[in-house]
Length: 514
Image 1 (cartoon, rainbow, N blue to C red):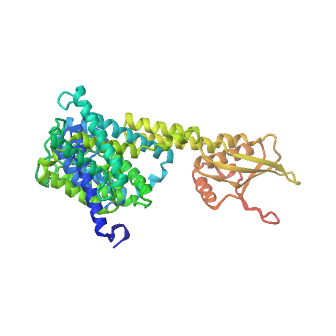
Image 2 (image 1 turned 30 degrees about the horizontal axis):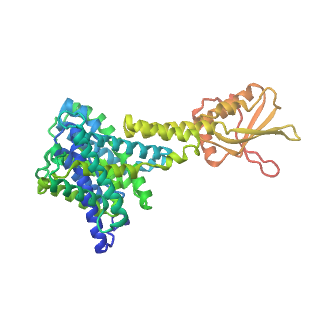
């Protein structure tokens, strides 16, 4: 058995910790799944089934043990227009196609490109998502029928019990190790509310979570090209958002636990989970940073915690709905507020004035876009801005040291990268009219990065040829030589107009190959 799927040896204490951690996660999953189902305008059970199926499969075969997946708001907001326009069956078909695309991403190992996400983007992602989680909890302080804020009395009671839950979690994490602190907070506040009959909103006020086992069914949509045209754009967007959120969460959990995760394996697991959930009436899902943080902070480190969370959730649906529906929302809000505090990268405030201004801008930009748009757009925007900023800096690094040898040949010793961003600066380094008849450009401290760089070399050679002078190139690396050879096949230069540039290898005795 590979290391990724190896079953760890756990003590009885570890089994207890993992199981209780899974129970805590399952309790927190219920209102989240119901709320996201409402966002997507589908039956609450569609969200709960997705949380169970996606959570179970990714816990079994995912790339990061201890990470929790389920129905998420980032996906739900994309599903709204599809459900409103074409109905829930088209959603199920879209989720299946979304899963297939994610499986392909795993097969072709596209998950490795998550390493291209810069650290400021990661910090922005974490901070933005923490703000999103916080804002999502504010909806619990509104009347679920009218959508208006609660009256002063109920509002004060909700806030008081939420802060009491937070206090119990904070104290429990310090002094009580036998029970995960979030579970302790939920249990204590629930006992208080139920015991004294305090009239505040409970899970059952959102919707009934009672149901049966999910049943297999092929989505009832026409098998036609027209259907494919409808669901493909949604599937592409959902697959991208799901993988970006999952892989960024994987990296975050890996940093917290100091253990690496398998990106390609996670892509495959997310895809397989969504294919299955689409056939069993679920709305699809991806990794959930909030529940993953609850699990990690409660001691969940292995696949067991994720598996038990999914099984507990199924148990709630089948057998325990009456009890779970009595849990006060204030207790779950308190848990999520603690998740927000633990998720937000408070250190970013301390480093903002220490890091480059461009990095600080990217951090704030990604946080803002995450809050006001969605995660996928925020990460893409952050990566693009970071890439442009890097290209701008790299473009300014190209330069040359020029000197003339005793035989009258002028040598330009180039340094810095030659690519699309630096070709203007590269061209400005040379003065063909004023240079001697023989010119050598030495690339020993430079690299050609792309075809634009090769075109710049060709254009420079043409400039020297037009001036009646000869340009030679030496000390190109082997990969640059290969690029130049390939470019020679694409650049349309006839033999009688050959600019006569080539590779000059400066051995003792000046043997030059052109």
